[in-house]
Length: 333
Image (tube, rainbow, N blue to C red):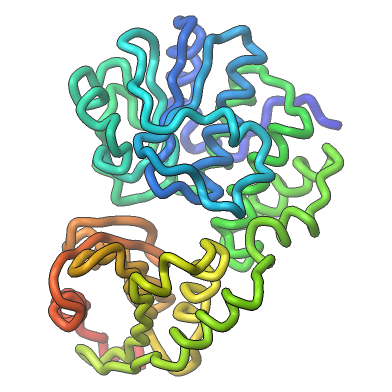
């Protein structure tokens, strides 16, 4: 196994050096992942926390919500040690991972915004406004890529548990390596040196569903709508709260993937009803910069994958979204 310091993100070397310097100066570090966490958030938090503990730091992972992670995250090493809904310590460094904006830290937002000077932001969402004293916002396949780079600057030797957590974020945020740069394969190859059962990881995180999931997915997919807007073809899928509450996160992510891949459409939209008139929207496209669309509506993300929250009747939410879409350039035809 290679023990060399990786340089997956050489263009941001100065930022990583600065973050490593901040970490070396402190004894206590609170790692904060975003609410409603996905595998990249949890993988980043668990890998970074484990790595910092190897350095002798008093490190603990937090998520600012009372509810636990979804069941498909249960195999990520360190996940059971995350503290949900507990207040952050008043002292020490705070590192947020995969939090595209301050509100994504949930209950910890007020503490974080009270003293940004002790906050380091690690994130790969290009819409992140930067809410810390040090903001590491770097274009990469996943936040776990950035965590791997930081651990390298800190001289932390990986182990199978850290490698698993890093791989979890990498495989899910790249859609099983369907989008990204050669860097994702280079990192995957390094992590596989630690004996990961990559087939089982994929099954646990993304592929395992029960009969009820399949039935609920069928009910959602059967009501797919194709809507024209500004020269674009938009696929709209809706998951009502009654179905959403019974569906696993794996099934929800599968529906989002269907929205991305539907032939003949330019934009895929999944509306997830959280409660009456309260929605979380996921946008996917290879034609439109959906991060810009989401940002106009109060959210953010990546060019090909973004999201935001909205309130109102379903038709109103869809109308507002369609109005925010850009006009398709005739030259793209």
